[in-house]
Image 1 (tube, rainbow, N blue to C red):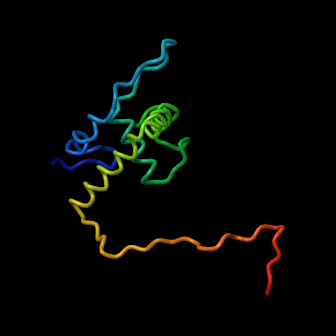
Image 2: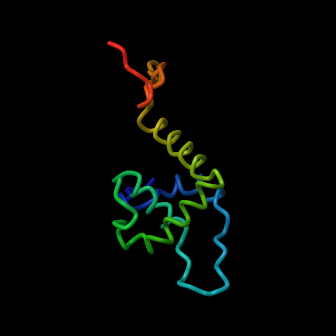
Length: 120
């Protein structure tokens, strides 16, 4: 596998993800040229990694609204969950994930509301 820039989706990874993605259907009203789905995925991964707002997405990934629209569509269809499974498996193969010890965080008691008195 070739060395890639942070913005790239490696070829090996793209070959596993591309079959999940249906071709993008353009709106009849025209609009701008559709973005390459690989570029869209790279933009989504950039946002996930950096935590930036959609409005701060670098222009190299295309229109912020288009990338966000793809993300919403893929998320609603369950495609993003499958992409994240693939990414986790890829990470596990390359780096390794130690699943021997895990913990769950939660509460067993309901938080009191304003109408409930809290006793000492």
